[in-house]
Image 1 (cartoon, rainbow, N blue to C red):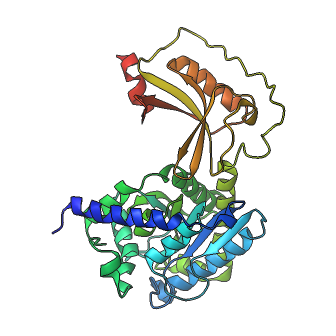
Image 2 (image 1 turned 120 degrees about the vertical axis):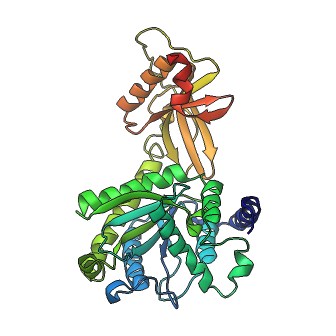
Image 3 (image 1 turned 180 degrees about the vertical axis):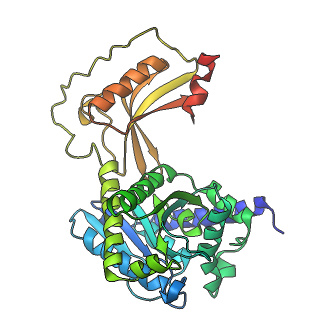
Length: 373
């Protein structure tokens, strides 16, 4: 059996090849928020057929409805991996997203189980493979075997091998943070807005998510093998309802990543920075720097105070295709907490503190541990 080291070499090769491919991204899309919608399975791969319902058709109907709704927004460009009942390889789906230099990749599927299990699940790439998540990863990755030349294109990768699945998760964590943000929005919409049962956000080593270089999620809209849920998902009303939840989540995510872009950019450069008054004694953590992450966006803007409602010490970091924006730069933990409170008062409700040691990002708990000893 091949070692994990060999798997890493093979998959890094995939990574390098796809990066070269994505370097030729369509520049004409840069002025729009690009969403790639992927209807799972298709053609000779029907997916699961729980209760006689065909997963590939249901997934496609939901994707087309999501796309139709999104296309009503002039600043969104929708690209489909398929618009009819045809087979598209996993690497082909990833290539479409990478070539389009997409901001999001959203894959729609339907679940199956030997029991009457029910509910939605949204997956992001990760190494947290529980037994059930491992089963899902194997099921979705096994479509590789339906490709005539799979041995050539997926050499060294075995969908049934735990080692392969673990390596997938380790190699591509770059967009996990924003993928999780979208996944939470999807499941929240399903549960709170649509009143569907949510099984929550999950992590699994899914090949198609690994090879897409943007925030990506795989949504299981329900179990076709569940008698009532299968009937619901096979109906036009059910498909329209689920599509509305996905569309609303995408729009919510778009607003989240593009906050501070456009409407918060002012021409007046004479903005007086807010002075933050600290309470209590300084809590200096040696060799650690704290910042407040106030925003993440696919667009690059100047890290100036006037672009961020007068907040001070603005800095910018590019991680993959995402720009992260921070306020503050201090070793005083009490000071950074005050800066976070100020950012919240300015409207950055989701801001949070990050810590760095020797230039490397570390957990907050690790950063402040010396002070508690």
